[in-house]
Image: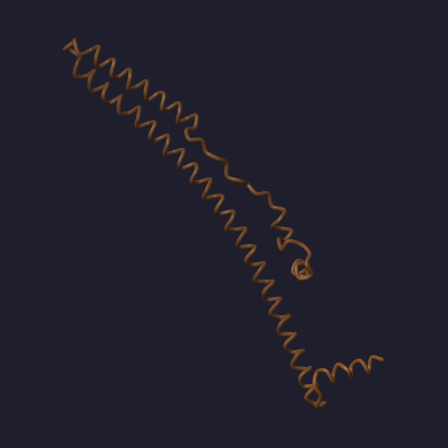
Length: 160
């Protein structure tokens, strides 16, 4: 309520002390390619290169040609697949950090919403109190049969 009074009097910024004191953890930027992605990409290129060179070099040897071509093709596929999986893991980590940041923001906004609802309740009570005072003043002026201006003069006369 003190914060609401400060706001009504033109002081403060409307943020409660508990909300303002919490450190905010900002999301950090994610590089286009993380070090792990670069490492896995390099290994994928090397695995494809060595697989292709192994296949080319063993074409002449007919005894192990089938096994070598199969192993080379498998290695050529697994390297890029590992790189692809590493990029997906990086995306998942980024999504988790974003989810956590959104969760913190939702919590902060929920607390602010509760504070605003409390302030709104206090304002409703103030409005009710002012309406009661207006009704009482209307009754007083009706009883005296005078207008508000005459009532104001009467109050000034009584104050002197």
